[in-house]
Amino acid sequence: MRVLLVFVLSTCSSFATSPKSDATERSVACEQGDAAACGALGGMHLVGAGVPVDNEKAVKLLTLGCDGGDLKSCTDLGALHLSGTGVPANGPVAATYFKAACERGWPSACHYLAVQHLLGNGVERDMAKAIALNENACKGGVAAACGHIGGVYKLGYGVEPDLERSLHYRSLACDGGELFSCALLGAALHNGTGLPADPQRAADILINACRGNEPTACFELGQMVANGNAPTALGTDPDGMYQRAMEIALPPCQAGDSNACMVAKDILRVSGTAEQFQTFCSDLGPAVSKGCNEGVFTACVDLIQLHTEGCGVPNTPEAIEVAKRQACALGVQLWCTP
Image (cartoon, rainbow, N blue to C red; front, side, top):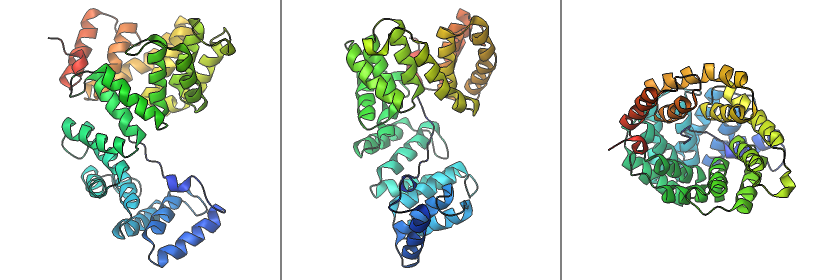
């Protein structure tokens, strides 16, 4: 389950003319009291789109936008306070911006506040609130919120595990363009896990997600080819898919993305040498173990898998049981034994 808060300024993804001229137009509009223009210009300063990168100026412009009633500016401002970009990191302040924008009908703000409640980051850890907020955001079209609910029900994080409900939300997330959920949905259709096996539908979903640079999808396509379940157009050699998955996964892994590292580990497990696998695991295992010991529930879930595979940590029943107890203590009911 991915629980990283990803801050994306959609206003900077495209421009009617050129970024520079667009910045000029928005600057004029902002001076004339257009709150949304102020916020959009602030976003442009964050990424240097037609204007110099200036995080402090971005904060000021987003504050103008938020004070003027632009809910996206409030949400983006909350994300800056959460990440410490242009301002000192402050989870409680971030939550006030998210809460205000959510209550006034901005779905992505509800999702970001849900993530804070999920992790107890700047607010109390409250799974009921997190799920309710994500439900609101999911209904409002935030695909990542649908995906988060799917992850919660898969692991039973604060709720009873429910694979059918998990896949329902993963399907909603995939329909909304959340490619990681597409990869998990495709894998379920490939393996017949929680859904009737449907190799053709699985391949269609996975191909689209792989083309969108989701490494888990590329890896799963390789597995389909290796198992002889892939459409003939994909050939009979899975190495191309594994290589593509590794090309996508390795840069974020090297930057510290544990999800990407778990994908890279799986690729090496099935396509690399034993030495390559253990060398990679010698760094991954201790890092994931440290995260689990620090109370990161997703790290504990990953640690169970690493112990099972002997990836940088002991492959013993006792070690696996300890990791399961740690995950259970953090609220992951999937690993709570009666």
